Image (cartoon, rainbow, N blue to C red; front, side, top):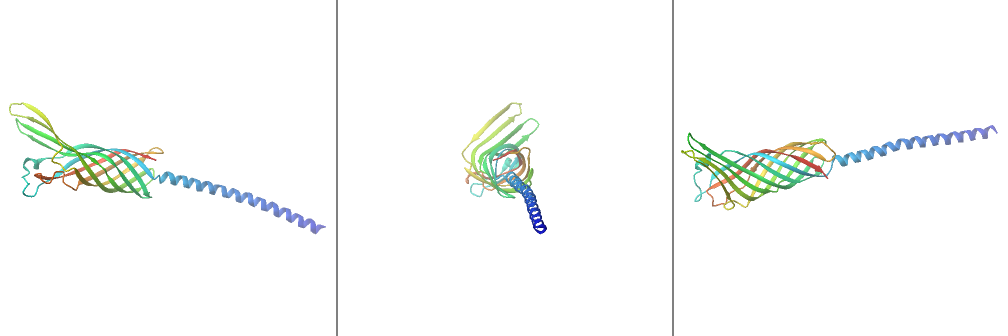
Length: 249
């Protein structure tokens, strides 16, 4: 009789211990599932694959100017003394995170560069500002690092379609007569140009979807702004920065 009671007691204790073990094991598994979900959610936010950007660009622009090859070339003359000109440009586009640290960026921009000239004497003055306008399609590959504060560096090419040439002139002569004129042209300029750009900057995430972007850029024009029969070869240069917003899709 006692043996039967002992066996029954062992059976009850074993079943109770087994039940407690199942409860404890189940309790340990639930946090693991929650952790996995949280990690997956964090990854989606961190690796958000696509962003749309809207930027304005201020640049200190100038040019490289050379005499064309014979029989078209002429001496540079006063154009040798042209200097830099500050201009604003604007752009919109998207950036796709193709890898944890690599993004591809493309878009459309309204680009401007130019040069200026000033001659001033005791009783005379002549100056002008020349602006070349383009529709650009910049394409860049960027190395990215960081989450809320992201560092970016890279470069790419910008095909450009010529829009317009404008020169704003002002003068004063020996009898203090003053005047001004605006010259606009579309002929005599290459319809297509190609530039290369290098960029390095940072963006700061200030909400779930929006970031503030600041990215200095150096841009160099690889092809001539003028037609082959022009007296000069003209290559634009620009050093400035992009300032704008990005939105995560």
